[in-house]
Each structure stands twice: as C-alpha cells, then as structure tokens.
Length: 92
Image 1 (cartoon, rainbow, N blue to C red):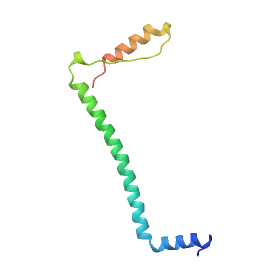
Image 2: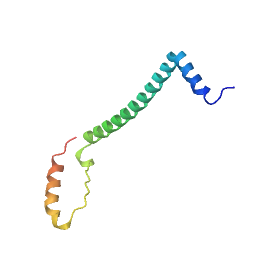
Image 3: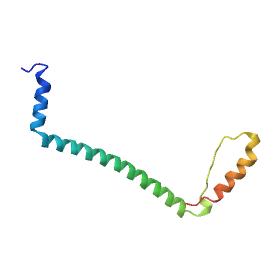
Image 4: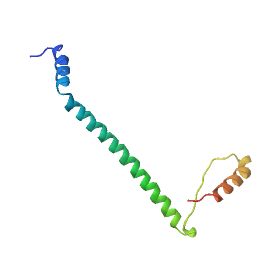
C-alpha cells in the first residue's frame, strides 16, 4: 500500500513515463475548449447577420427604430434634436 508521500511520487513518475498520452489529452482538452468558444462566436455572428439582413430587406413601412433615454426635462429639446439627426443617418 502506498503512503501519502509515495502517491505524488508515483503520479509524477507515471506522468513522465506516459508523457505522449498526457500531451495528447491536454491537446484534446484545448481543442475542445477552442471548438466550444468558436461555435459560440459563430452562432452570435450568424444571428446578428440574420437580423441585419431581415431589417435591410424589410420595406420601410414595416421597420421601426425605438430609442429610449432618461433625460432631464430642461435638456429635452437639445437631446431630441441630436437623437433625431443621428437616427436619420442610420443605415443597415
């Protein structure tokens, strides 16, 4: 039976002996992480692209832009003019 001091030594010795298997396992884990991350980013890009395409292809009568902001009443006229001018230049 191995003591508590012999176990780490045994694990290190086995790891040195089986380093190709250990390296392949780490490579497999890294590839799996990269695949999951890439799939997540790809799904987000496809969804955003589909949304932009649907907005671009829709007739103007069926599209709308809603902008909301909390603005003090005194600044409402200047903020409204700024927002309306910027929204008028938006193109998808």
